[in-house]
Image (cartoon, rainbow, N blue to C red; front, side, top):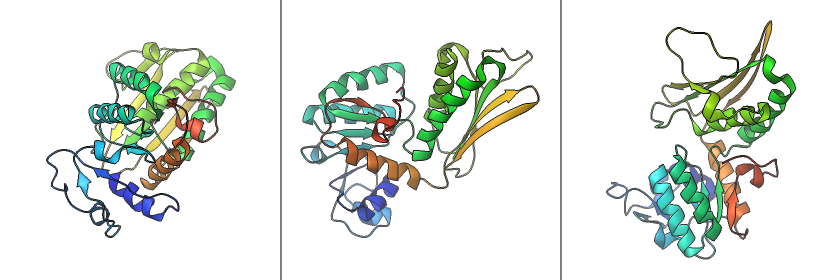
Length: 258
């Protein structure tokens, strides 16, 4: 995603790459970020810390790991630099930290930054409310073999959207994969994860009834959809008041749970 963002930033009017960060010890440290991303020389060297890139007139875009993201939010809060977070896999403690730090700088936190997925979140809630408890809810997500967290953050957000509409807490009714013998509980919301090859991202929300089923599907053909959404979020959050926002705030849609 870092390379995708660098290439897209170069193509976006009014946006300039001010810094690039990689993990400590990376062989890319000190190299030109544009050349590494295949975007041509940009005169921005890759560093191992976010602090030199933070400050007035900047927005941090973070798509790393939960541990790194929390550290980046701390740096953003210290310098009052707005930040956009597209990382997934946070635990409850890390989310509490981000919420607390967001009181000190404008923060966009979203499990998925594509326009299509955020529209899908609204549709899932609408369909679930209309169908009610008569239809079973199952979610299947597929990603590339290198993705570390499962289920995906987007799958969890979709499951919460359905659960909220049906008056169910995902923590109580979510079922991640199935094995053994036993019937499905009526209140279950199933989540199944597939990891294979270079799949950019695919999510299917199935509402299964007796005699029919409805499927809502989103397929990302490349990571550019996420990158374009992240840049749009960065443009939007610049100058916003301190606080925690979701991608649906950026798009002017109903507020999502993060």
